[in-house]
Amino acid sequence: IDCIKALMSLIGIFQKYASKDQDTDHLNKNELKELLQKEFPGLLNVSKLFSVMDALDQDKDGQVDIQEYFTTVCTLGIIYYEILGACPKK
Amino acid sequence: IDCIKALMSLIGIFQKYASKDQDTDHLNKNELKELLQKEFPGLLNVSKLFSVMDALDQDKDGQVDIQEYFTTVCTLGIIYYEILGACPKK
Image (cartoon, rainbow over all chains, first blue to last red; front, side, top):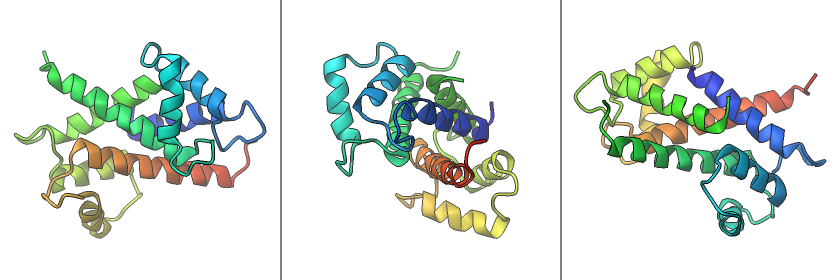
């Protein structure tokens, strides 16, 4: 799919999990936990999840906003790229 | 589509344009220009493109790597989110 559709999908995923409570522009701890567990199954165990939350929550407001979310998702993208890069294209 | 597929699409797009020359891990000016023009039609005019290149090229090596690319794509994602946010969901 193209760049814009990929970005729209990433935004849609943020909105899907962020809108479980009144504050639809932020992910709280539980919403973030659910997003990471469902979207990246097996990537992180629960105890690591909350340390990830602290790392993501750059402004320490206990919530993750779209900017912190995109920073995270891009970091995961770079990790995937490096993993892919490690195995030469067939 | 899910998060991982969206990330894989973004990686695939980077690789598609970065592999037009020998250096498949970087976008040179022409590759970046082609990516931005094709993936974000109408978003930028050509003269702006090269100022975007300078802004993206954080380590000033005249190339854009995967990290600089993801930083850009995420910035565009946040801009789209804010534009979407400005118009209430129907």
